[in-house]
Length: 268
Image (cartoon, rainbow, N blue to C red; front, side, top):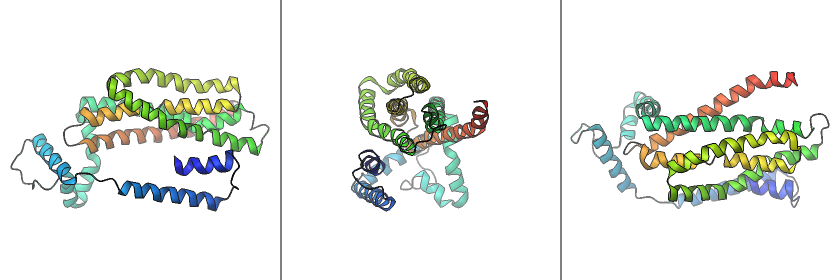
């Protein structure tokens, strides 16, 4: 957020700095280096976590005196078995999802949320330009503003949104919050259609913020996966499974847009 938002804010919105691609790259590179350095300062109790995961793995497989050393987690065993083990590790999240009822339902929920959000995001810029009449009467300055408003407000407002959602999920419970947020997410996504009626530049920021907050159900969903739905010692695999379904939703959504957009444009 910082690496992208700060250059856009200073160059395109405030016009404080000259629009120089080299300067933008330098700012983004510096931000990435700072992020990496901060990440390097984070330390975890590695030995304790590995011992915990091993205990859970043996309990899950019903074996206390198995063929595998207690100091070697299942992921390392897959790596030790070569290509076959690695392939087995890659497909394991799918078997994990379809083998556990609650995790399977959460993956489906994540897929549907991501699918609806990606469809709207893919056509958002084109829809904004069309609603403002920039296809018939192009204006480079307004096109730049549309790009800025399509990105910056959502990135800025996502920070307090995630903080508030995480706090409420902790206080009220993730499942209850997830059930409450899903209808609101549908309303927030539908609010973007009013752009065809409002046709004002400022409403782009409203739509983008609505779409950003429509993704907030992912916060309690991820908390549920990591906090109780994932099998013992397999939190990483469960979270990866949800990520895979979310990515598939984006891929299928892009295919839908690529297939349906041309006939919709021809229809006027």
